[in-house]
Length: 63
Image 1 (spheres, rainbow, N blue to C red):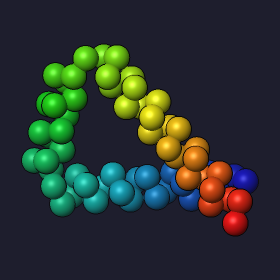
Image 2: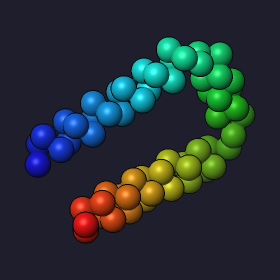
Image 3: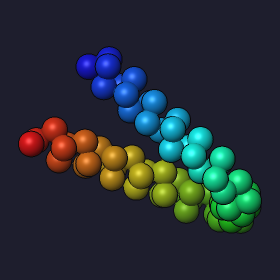
Image 4: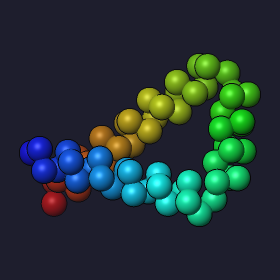
């Protein structure tokens, strides 16, 4: 169980690192766009991301 959690954290760090290394100006533009969004919209995006991640894990673990 803990190995899976650590694997997930490692994968997130790799993907985040790649984004910052390969497209730092894109990240800045995305952050600026996020600042201009209403707080409720950002919250909805976060909750949707969590739901999508949980659904993906559930589907993957069912096989």
